[in-house]
Amino acid sequence: MKQKTLNNIEKVLLEFLLRKRSIFSNNNKNNTVKSRNEYTNSDYLDYKKKKKL
Image: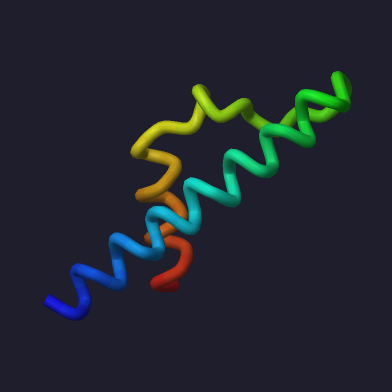
């Protein structure tokens, strides 16, 4: 239960960071950071895999 809660919190924080980054990318047209809508669940899963390594 505790682990599930931590995972949910982590996901929310990651979502927040990705949104924040997309705001900055909108100001800079040359930036290649994905917009909020381009982030998918697979991006999150890739993040989780890298974190475990």
